[in-house]
Image (cartoon, rainbow, N blue to C red; front, side):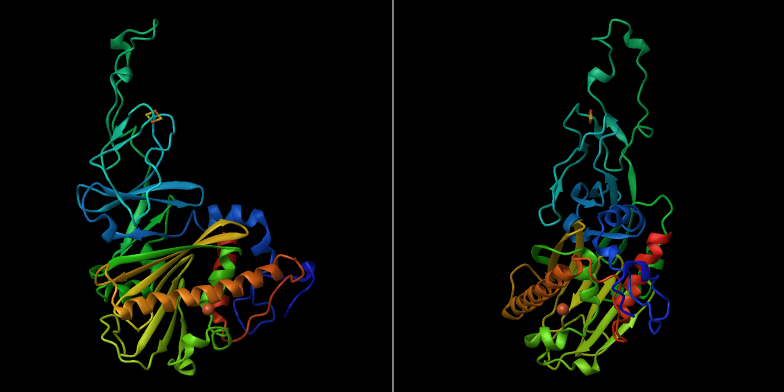
Length: 377
Ligand code: FES
Ligand SMILES: [Fe+2]
């Protein structure tokens, strides 16, 4: 049941029909929780890093921040994506400038600008300047006393990396669960689609005033759609839609009346799908144009997140249908931003201690359960 008194809150029950079925509100509003999430959520689960088509050639790279960590994702000489902390093994300088996936860098090796330690694309130390090989400024050492630096022992810090189709994920844990376990059903379903054949066409980044979990919860349910996405629901049979929940992944399936030649419709020619993968990644197929979008819901702090929306079509020149796809998506975002910012104004007053979820908010329930599971781990 709804609780207005903090001392009365309980953990999220496994059963949505129980009285206590939502994550207590303090987990959305307290700064300590965000610090804990850096370790227990973003430090343990697979997090989307970017699209493989951005780094098709060896040496192409982009950077990505996850929690407090700064990562480089680079295509290795063996053709596989690798991830490293963007931190030099010498004295810890950040090495390459922040480089978004939409404007990737290209380097045959990774060089730290501070004292020019240089690393191969597999992270091993390849060379150091002469000042690390000769003790010319040190009166207490002879050149022959200088210890040779082992390339492996002074390599960059490698971070786990794996893929689902063209989507590259990273995991900061020393002992991660396999990505296929976290993705479950989603892996097979997405890998059955030709997602890698589509090219990045545009990116829209928005900063929104609410906790990231508020937007994630809103994205996951459609009880608000009828009253808040009135343009979008025209032409959609909302009562025929279905919210499927798996372990770390849930999907909104819905049908679209319009007939479009879309390679991504596998089950039914009218079916569209919104996939959510815990903790903060979505893949959106609207069924109105041949292409897809992805969202990353990246927390900035307790009160703000950044929504990074990327769109993929046959090529970067958008057809009228594709422009309409992006416009629809943008309109949905703006309508949702208004909802979640208003919800946040209420939540951050601290008046509500624990919400009450309805029967069709089972996806939100799953999300809240996963958050609780992560906090308790
Ligand atoms: S900190 Fe990178 S070379 Fe010195
Ligand atoms: Fe919405």
